[in-house]
Image 1 (cartoon, one colour):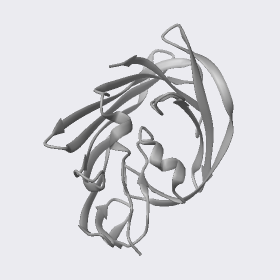
Image 2 (cartoon, one colour):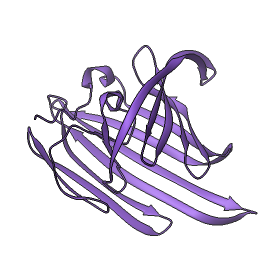
Image 3 (cartoon, helix red, strand yellow):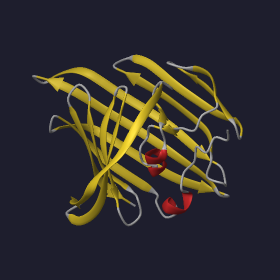
Image 4 (cartoon, one colour):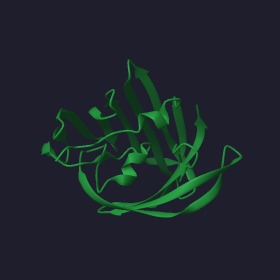
Length: 206
């Protein structure tokens, strides 16, 4: 079996930056920034997530994560690395392509060789909708998933009415809905249900 972990590079050829505000139970708690850069056909995607949860003005949960995805000229994932401080608990994930059939994975929750088609859980890449397996970009935990198309929906993105496609992703420790802009499959919204309701809303697309 050939692994086809990839990004539809042509869909994102003009995309340089996507910035989200993060809300938990309707209260703004942080941000998620995605930066795209290109060099000789190689696509590098940098993710940075930071949020802080307070109760009665006192901080009790702090989170910071940085991850980098590298895709080769054919759009296949070549390498991924991340490090996360999850309320001061350090987690990591490293993925390295070995050949067309396997990836070497070294992370907090999984270490070994994977010979299975998958997507990283950064969600910007709409290829995740075609997969039955995702790997946590935080800990390398491998999760089975089921993706369902829910509906078309018009939402406001930066006060502009935007046609979107809404998908539901379910699985072990997975309960999330993702909105992709219909015209180019750029992610514009995400809602996660885990220890509260988390909402990612786009603030800038460049």
